[in-house]
Image (cartoon, rainbow, N blue to C red; front, side):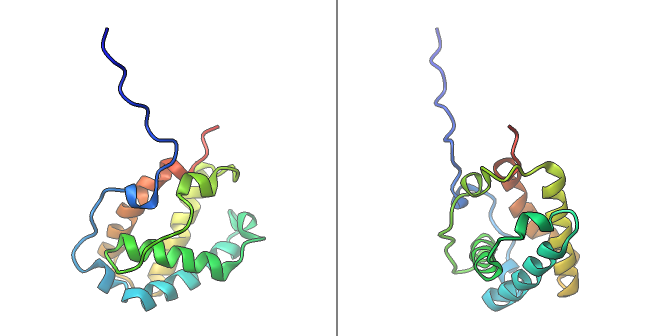
Length: 140
């Protein structure tokens, strides 16, 4: 009888998403300051969004913006190190549906559009974030 393969880890650390960033992505987003400005806009839009704003009613927006800045900065090839919780742990008790995730992506696209980030660069970032879907969306 063949041995069973090892079970997948229950938690996926932020650094476990293997896709490498496109060359110059960090710079295209304005480096750390540009990413922070994007995230500041993004979290305000999230909280105001009729579809998912309720999920963020008790969220400290400054803290969330900083966590997102570190995460996006790291994923985009910048010098930041995301030290927050992994995505599965952070969203475990939130009952996040696919529709919530899709709404969040749309709001992020609105923020990127508002900051004049080229469509190609937006897609490059979204490709880096997409693998998190499986850890964020609750499939209970």
